[in-house]
Image (cartoon, rainbow, N blue to C red; front, side):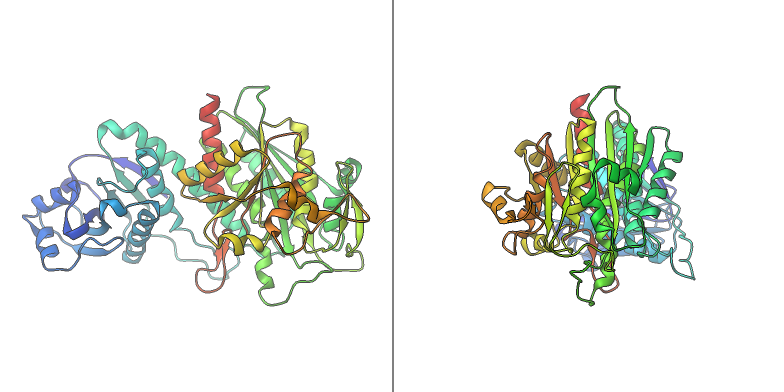
Length: 498
């Protein structure tokens, strides 16, 4: 998809579909007024007839509007100014793209010069339009015998004033990078477990290594993990024929010697629960248990395309959790890379087992910060629904930075406590720590487990169990969250360091 910045007189723009805004009570945005004037009041007449009122995300497609060059004019409602926010902006962009995709046009131009949301940052307003328009074009057909029809839409343009061209260009480039990162994450998440194995993820990292000079990938195999003492990670893959992998991607865009920010992703490419077997209904969705890893791949892709002046390491702990005669059993005790022992009371609490060794490994980079991302607990869905990522951290400043990034990226997150009282639920009579702490506060006790391995650095845990994919129906599939949050966090860290 070709995204472009254009300027000039609205009525003379060369495009197959011009998108203009109608505000509450039929009030026209400046661009809409220009079209109305060129068409001798045609837009006003349509509004006066009651065909569109300006309600948020309301649309009306007009053909052969007199006095303008474009073949089609698409009116989109933006509602009252006080009601505008990122959520309603996304609704409007989604509505527009739904109409555009149905028309078969090859180009569309957004001339949205009214207030778009309550985020006053013009860069982010424009970037969000690019992100959300691009996201609506995503199609998964990798495993279908009949591929999707080629997209007729070839160009999306944004109208800006000459003085705003530089900001708009940056917003367009960054938005495109985030769209591409989200598409990578969605593709990986949507692939079935017989294709997207730990080895497949390792191959994707090596392909990124080939594509971007700034990124180097290293794959740590099972023998090397055993030498490092990563027996907790290895225990998860014991029951599988698929070998586990620790995937390390180093992006060096900053100065040599600058401490890197580390992203650690849970990469359980399929989760049966192991010996603690899950119910069969809906188990197919456990291919999404590697969406934390997918978000790391997406963020690293966006990072490379943006060429941010910052050092970042992406680590993916990849394994398949299967039952077999070799599988880890409830009650087994394993030794982690840190030397701590873990009593595995439930083999379906496996994400924390792969992450704890990956988090210990992350310490070797002497990181500025470490953020792990995982579809870790169903309890997070009970706490926050399908709207927000759960944030838990040993550093409140870091937690606030991540939530701020989530707000800026319209990829919301919310902090949960990490109090010492919850740690006691992980006590074990036979090992240093148990891998589960009972039903109460399940998201928190999972993070408490991880916190035992992160005492040497600033760390935060993102539980994306509620936001990583949609279940059932025509919308079933990976969402690409939290690539926008992670990318915004790295953008902010880069700006601070500069």
